[in-house]
Image 1 (cartoon, rainbow, N blue to C red):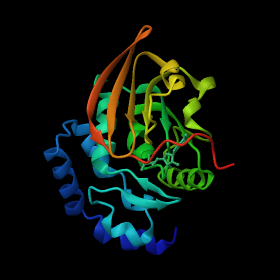
Image 2: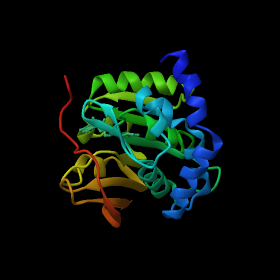
Image 3: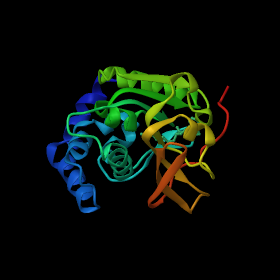
Length: 226
Ligand code: SAH
């Protein structure tokens, strides 16, 4: 990243621009003030291409290359809020699995709410870029892995939370298996154009399912890029 990128970022990332985004998320129903404050603080413009930086604080998904997108801030806020809803103030989830690191923006937003994040991405170039960005922001409680998230991350399980940023057509059994007692799996499920966001909570051997609304994610694709 060039020095210019940082400097030219200042104008478009003014307090007013960020306040506008936060007010919008609030009007769309995001209630958790700690999550809103985190969205305000994380420099989203550093996760997108320089050419798109002026749009980084709009509530919209933007392309990050390789046919993938940085999630819409509202969706990142909604998923984060759903994951940590029952957490007492100042407490952290022990270990969270994220499937679909992408550019690492959701990872950065989530970082203070977990002691550790294990994040899996199937496209190697995105992993390299995310690692660089998270390093620059001194976010150090994240382990990134180039792997197929459909398998979860067995050696690191169980997870107190699992957050999936790409949509399978059915909830993967591996992810259910790797969820800790009382843990939440936040996942979009369904075909393109008819995906719903779910919060699935483990209660012993049964799984409670809540629907959080219609969403639009890139598809979860099995395997990796090599
Ligand atoms: N979390 C990102 C958005 C990522 S977009 C953000 O904060 O903006 C979804 C990502 O999921 C893409 O990068 C895509 O490559 C990845 N993905 C799709 N299928 C996957 C799989 N089976 N395992 C791991 N990552 C996957």
